[in-house]
Amino acid sequence: MPKYTLPELQYDYGALEPHISGKIMQLHHDKHHAAYVAGANTATEGLAEARAKNDFAKIAALEKALAFHTSGHILHSLFWQNLAPKSGGEPTGPLAAQITTDFGGFAGFRNQLTNAAMTIMGSGWATLAWEPVAKRLMTTQIHDHQSEMSQAAIPILVLDAWEHAYYLQYGPEKKSFFEAIWNVWSWPDIAQRFEKVRGLDLGLRGATDSR
Ligand code: MN
Figure 1 (cartoon, rainbow, N blue to C red):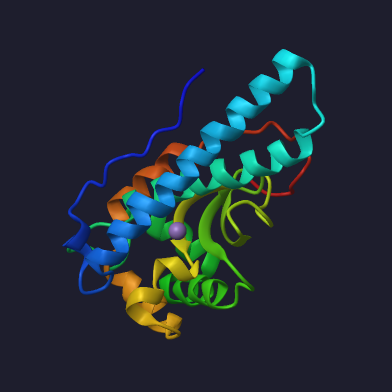
Figure 2: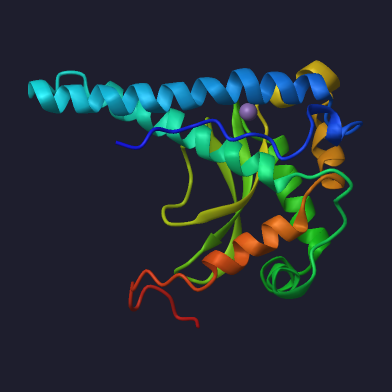
């Protein structure tokens, strides 16, 4: 059975400064993300053990733990790769065109995503996701790591809005973090993710009147 593993960062802890401090990156990756990797593997093993014993008394708790930790692992893996030193700016090419189609322009998208992040109640993420039925980009506001995500929508950009993502540096001024992060989005990374998913066909005939 494959094990989840903690991916190495593709840049130094301090490479995203001054926007994200090296100390936050180190704790966030080495402690928080690592805990989700361990939790995903533990939940997977727990389900294997339940099957072996044919004892599913704890399956509801195991399924909840599996969704939480696996989603946490995948979102953090994506978040690190969505970011890069000396980046930011705006996307170009097909992703930029799709953002204009679906949000009226980059400014509308940026404001929508930032406000989604700002208004999460408790812990969660704001994402830019590809919804393959209507074939459009949408923002989503994920609670914890897994709740309130539209099924089948695939995140291509994720913004961690948990307090552990910014509090050490920004304290209660989370708006400053949600503004600063626009200086370190790696649009080439996000654009290549868009290219990977934009052709996905779920085969749900008649579920939309468009395209
Ligand atoms: Mn996090």
